[in-house]
Length: 533
Image (cartoon, rainbow, N blue to C red; front, side, top):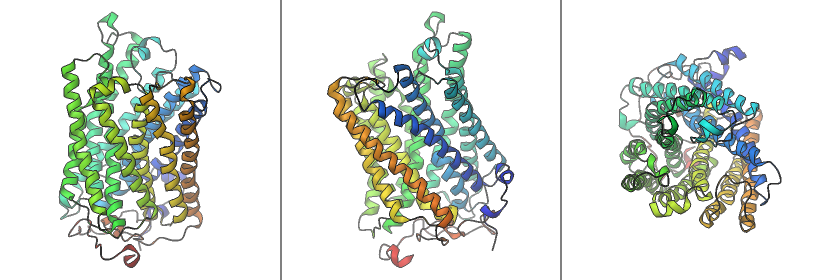
């Protein structure tokens, strides 16, 4: 039997110099977990402050720096790299029958670039933080803020190159390294999702890099790109920023959709409903996502005609998203469903993402958006999509492929308890914020009128439950590494080439080019998981 990738060198140097895509995925997982807890600590302080109407925990300036730190860390150091850089790195070569990614050394370089950018962002926090919000809106970020804006944006600039390199690597890999006989419509939907995400990374991230560079240059040298006194336009920043940042939503959500499309058929024992339409919907979301950035600017003064076009396109992007939700629902219909932990997380993702998507349609409506802009309704919508969607799917992926990654099984009961806790804690935390937003509570305020106290108290109490839910997997997954029972090659009787390798996989994945399956997701609903496993 070939040596597993975990046994191929035990020194720190063997890990830091590795070009094995599986080990690089582990390096990413360690880094993003650390950043997740740092960002989560900032969120904890935010919710503690908002538990009472008065500013009795931190000053207004510290509060501004806390929510900026939370946003910057969670968006660029956790959400964007989580599924693509961890699960994508580990799984894409295995799923397409390749031995590694197309550019293994570039893959390792992407992790070092990501880590360097992350450390620069942490340095900006250690020096005193940033008070602009994670969107860095001009002219405040260029002319007025006395915080460490240039350092934080330099970190974001560096991290962007990691995203570009990673996306390029996935695109070339999917095009050139598929096993013989594996056509495009034999690819798992997770690979389709990573491929579409990679296109967004390569096309959109350079715009973010250019924009952050211009903000830093204007801040340091007053070059006049965003300053009207020198012929600039502060709204130009919003156009450039959201041209990247709305597609960035799909950088976080598309891989999550790919995860759900792998987990749900396995635990429903059904072929995915409408496979080709699911693949087309993934590419449709990636395409239309580039055309809707203006819905973030309905109250910025853009022309009514432009706002109408962006509103229409924003409704249009909901169609391929709805196709996916309906197809997952149809996949469940008459299935032999088993509610193991990965399935609970995946169903949680579908439910929370659906609520987040539907409330996004409220914000795409011009008249409603005027009232809801910059209220807690937007905060809740964003978190339902990003945290309720992407993070739930990341946990689904972690639990589904954990036996393959580590060769160990975790305690399924504790995993189910954690999934339920996270789902309940999340809704308890963020659903009250929809109501607060409709009632008119502005976001980013750390003092608020007493009539908003009860709902904010519910939200802060829910955050405690949510935090407990997030800590549980850290404990039982860690325990499984030490005392978990050995996992077989395919403990969930799943389909796909990654499940044909031992657990954990050997260093070079496959000794010979594997034969792709005759049909993707070839499950038999008449054979439940208990009988087939």
